[in-house]
Image (cartoon, rainbow, N blue to C red; front, side, top):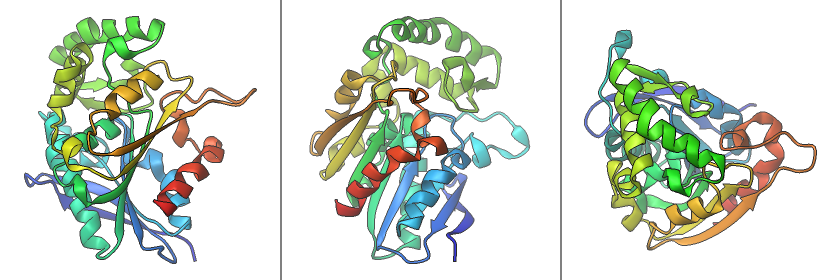
Length: 282
């Protein structure tokens, strides 16, 4: 028998309907994982990784934040979503949904990029017994490396503020990410945080940073200039009660670059067992 994938709808904490995919293993190991995706990244991009975890016995919930993927407003109408909505209403509701579907399980989260930062806004993060983040840095332009600093500064001070005021949805390819479109209000929020690190953290809420007191494994990607090791370390110092372990992943000789989004590609499956082993033993 193969992993069962159930498409489901659940309500954010303010009642906004959201869409998710629940991966149900053939034989459960008693552990359940919430996968919090990167900015603008539809949940379908994590299908291979979610199936990989489910094959090892984990129940996995992937979901789309409001305004993205399957959680876009009906008819494609404009939506004024904010990062605070995502961090304080959407993400905690996804965790509530996972808990309701897997009573008695042990709960974990995997956060990718902005999805790792958003965990810091969730007031119910104390439900978790372990967190893994991938390429989750501060998002501030000055914490980037090399030419990426200039790219982020230009985006944050010029391109995104302009685009966010003239279009309803911003193609996230503008920032070089492998994502889809996001609501203009989200792009403006992100740009504000890119200019001001404190504002970026505050935009999505802070409750989870203080609430979580368990182990946390943070992966920095060596060839990701937007969230280098120093930026990843800076973000995770916000988890003041967590026991943080920082690891770095570097592409092998001859391997395609990994970057901020490549970890979850199926051709990088060789990178996945390390986090799986950690989730299975935490």
